[in-house]
Structure formats: structure tokens, C-alpha cells
Length: 120
Image (cartoon, rainbow, N blue to C red; front, side):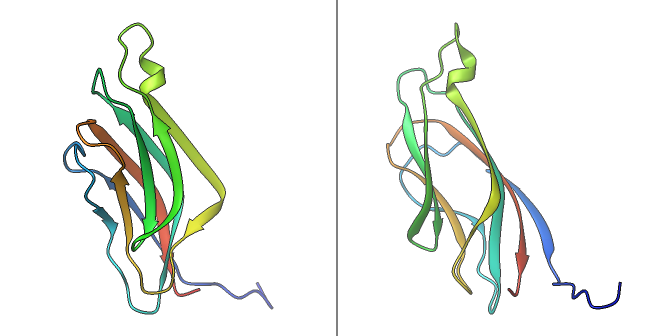
């Protein structure tokens, strides 16, 4: 199409390789020099039956989104799962990684995310 510029982008998806059970940052997407990471959606579940936690998405160390996931309750399992879709995707700062962390120790969180990386 004439007059339309296309911005190159590479899509990605992430699933935590193990349950997140501490407050350390886990790298979702490594920094790419000169590029931004965009997060379009996240899905988070918690299988711990006693501990709920805030889960934060970060651009390097700066929090860009937070959500609470409740403890797992067998009678109401949907409470321990959250899904967020971002019509305006979350964006990292240029050349920064996307990280995820729990704010409470001993939750058992699985984190999934989808997005893309672009120079703009």
C-alpha cells in the first residue's frame, strides 16, 4: 500500500519455566539494544492454598503493571487466576528487559505473557 510505513516487529510469548515462589525478578524478555518490548496480554495463576500475592511486570526495575492473584481455593478455582489484555500494550523503556516478580514469598505463581519487540 502506497504511503503506509511498516514498523518491523517480532512477536514473542513467555511461560515461566517453573512456579515463581519468591520475590526475585524473573526475566520475561531480555533487553534488546535500541528496541522496546510491548506486552499485549498476561495470564497469571497461583496454586498456593494459603498465600495470595501481588504480581508486578517491570521495565528493568520500574513497575509498569501490577495485579493481585488470590490463593487457590478448590471450591472457587477461578479466583486464583487473572488475565489482563492491554488494548494499549505495556511498553518497556528503550533497551530494557521485561521482568516479573511476586511481592510475597511462598506463593506458587505461573506467569504467561504475549507481546512483541520493535525499534519504535
